[in-house]
Length: 316
Image (cartoon, rainbow, N blue to C red; front, side, top):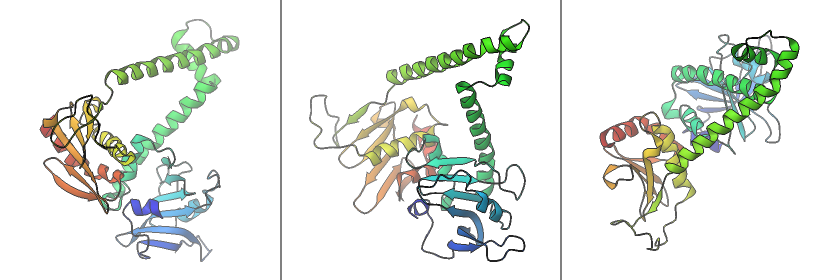
């Protein structure tokens, strides 16, 4: 329930978050899916829930049956920790066998915040989600394919790569000889790229600066009890993801003050673009040139991508 509340839905409104939603299948009547998310009077997301200890693999058959009997465009299978989002990319009105988005709440990736934000009630758009779902699904398929072949290259994969780097006759023994070389080559390539990224990150790391409300503290001045909270760091992460298409993340810095958590461009006070206020009863964000907005959770920051873009363009 809290997951869907975070996305802006009223889980206590039976007209919006409908339990035991009827999804009759063929001649079978009385078939019910656990929940249906209803938007503008029509079911948009069918939700099938399992126990938190259950592995969701091979548990999508019920959702698959219900999917084609309603106007819903999305199916969601969850055990409370893992959330698998499905649609009908391969064949219309027939749920795909693989999800286009899988989220583990214990290990959410940066890019997934924006994808989740698309499912927020105030941001829900079937066409936009479907469009991005296709790219997500095939990107995931590609990453899985590469991951499998990096660990244990298939003969076909090895044969293709050998054809690009070896002019001799490609016999079975030749492929067997090249298989460990290819695996080693990929591992070395990945290691080198990771090291390059780490080196770049160390050279352009985000510098944490704690400042007083009116003036910057010197290195030897105590921090006056200012503590940067996990929520503030999460806000910084969401902001970076939301703004990645408008500015190099290495240009973004954060500074914590007694009254707010601020984000600046190029570590310049005059180029502040965002402030996060944590209050006892509510959270507020201030986006420069756009105003102040109340948010429920830090993920809601992604809903203000247009305002963030304008602030960055005005002050970068």
